[in-house]
Image 1 (spheres, rainbow, N blue to C red):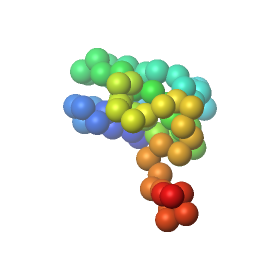
Image 2: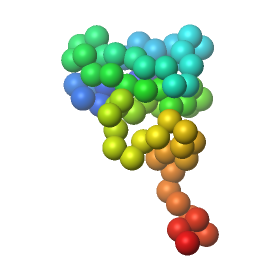
Image 3: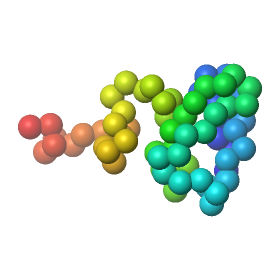
Image 4: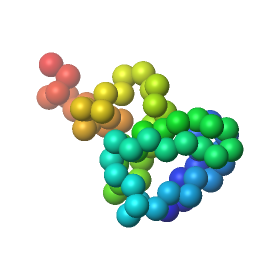
Length: 69
């Protein structure tokens, strides 16, 4: 699975079968750290991403009208 570092655009070589959600990876090029929030599809977020809580399974999902109340 081709994932690109959001900081330096370096391709990250991550095998979704060899990582787990919650694991932290490091970009070999710039040294930025990322948490894996999903393995299918593979999604990463910066470790210090504001608003991200590893207990929040809905990260990055838009709230529906029913959920905004």
